[in-house]
Length: 394
Image 1 (spheres, rainbow, N blue to C red):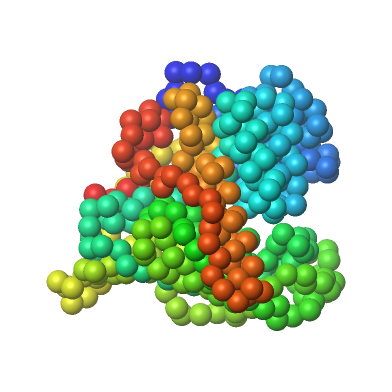
Image 2 (tube, one colour):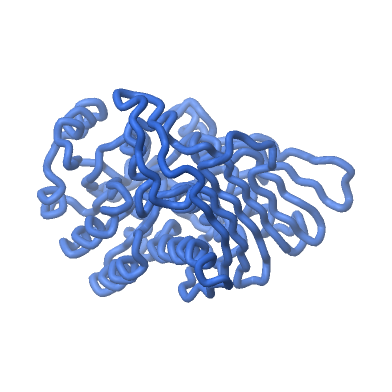
């Protein structure tokens, strides 16, 4: 993808499992350049640097302090997100973080206030709504495919991460759980499609007091569960649309459609947008049925521009394209605007999820005080390098 300006120089902090997909994908964007990486495990960082051609390995503190680095890619565990992001901003760097934005809303507001005072940008995963599937859904909604949206339902049935993640402890510690882990993907897509959320309610429970790690060198080890692992929520959007969401680590399997949007004239069905398979939540089928039709019709698989097919051997942002949010932040910095996958969106989602978790204890709906801009669809701009036909259906 062409870019006349010099790339944004990025320091990656946190070289765990999620870093692989970022290191792989960021090489596809010529407006970002990961020039250094590091973590608390320097042996791991050196191995990642060797695999992906990162020229320099350094401690997190040295990366943050480096005046030659423009932005920090924060891939640490959730409990460390706020500390690393705040330090990066203090050092005069833009920051893009994995989800969730923070585990304490006060930290999130401090980060947003500091960024605003310094004229820096804050971006946050998930960036999955940049994918061809979700851009297609949004365009169909904007064109009135289902009439006026009235409701939405999301179902995320999983049985946890201990079967595939070798060190899953943090998923079951404070700051973890299915809502904070999986909820951001679905809630970000909801806000992208329907706008910000006004109030929420929820019920949740912890089904197992401990769980067994079922893979890797720790196979058979038991770990404690500190958080609720089955969460049901009700959502009301500022627009008046109402919805529901189930997110669980306690369900073996389900045939329930994973996300549906209801309108006065029809229904959109998005089967299996599975965050566990990063490709699925970026790509996949979109089904439409209206009052005028007697059956479901599928939108054609999105088609990508030639440069994406050559670079990725796939179709547009219809693969696990995590990292595109960082590239979009780099374009936002060039154009002096806020990124679409913004810190404000991340903070809004965190308050929404906190409200869902607080609601059972107080027995009532929780009003959401924050708001955010509804992210713009990609085709509404002329962003050279990102605004090609990113797998969006007509």
